[in-house]
Image 1 (spheres, helix red, strand yellow):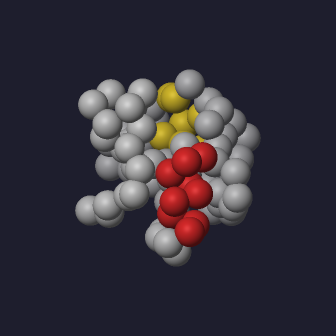
Image 2: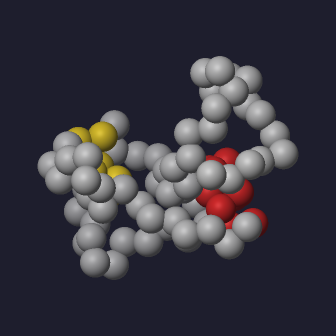
Length: 76
């Protein structure tokens, strides 16, 4: 668990989602504290072996991967 020095009231009851590859605020936090970032949404047409999130979170549609939740679920 990571503790942040901010709370986002528009996020439900003040909880942080914690998906840095797909939320820019979470990605900024992860980069600042050198935390691992594992994408779980693969953009259409992207190669799963080479897709990486760098400085901009991927917030578009895609297929869930790198997740035990579902290998073939669609997002977006």
